[in-house]
Length: 168
Image 1 (cartoon, one colour):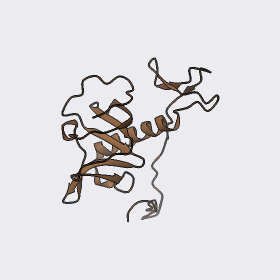
Image 2 (cartoon, one colour; image 1 turned 135 degrees about the horizontal axis):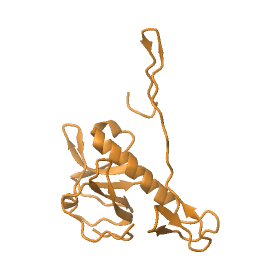
Image 3 (cartoon, helix red, strand yellow; image 1 turned 90 degrees about the vertical axis):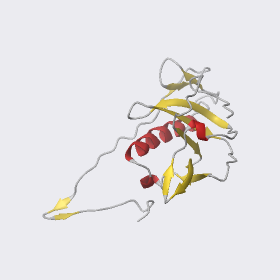
Image 4 (cartoon, helix red, strand yellow; image 1 turned 45 degrees about the vertical axis):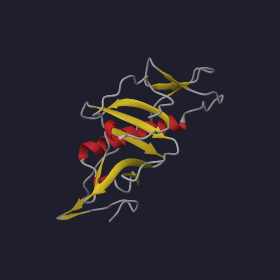
C-alpha cells in the first residue's frame, strides 16, 4: 500500500484493522456473497493503493479504523466500489455509524486542502482537530450536521417517509 499523506503519522498498521477506503462517493468492499457487503480488513488489501490521505480514526464503539481517500484506484476483481449512500442499508448498525463519521471527515479534508481566504495549502494542526493555513493562520474545523428524529402522528395514523435518493 502506498500512503502519500498521513494525518497524523500512522506508523505500524495492525493486520486485523477494518478499512474504510473511499473514492469520490463510493466505498471499497469485498465483492458480496449472498447480497451482503463485507468491509475489508488491512490484511485483505494485498494490492498497491494510492491515497490522497490516510489516517487511523476511532469508531463510535471505540475500535480503530484505517480510513483512506483513494486516488484513482485500480482494484482486483474480488473487490468492488459501491455507492455509499445507495447501499447504506446493507451494512450493520456499527458499520453505518463508522461510515457516517469517517465519510464526513474525509469530505472535510477534501474540501479544505487550500485556504478559502488566501489560497495557501492547509496543514493538519496536531494540537486540535483542525486544518490550519500557515500563511494567514485561519483554522478550518470539521462540519457537524445535527439532526433529529420525530414521530408525526394523527390519532392512530403515523406519517412514514423516505428520501427519494434511497432504494424503496
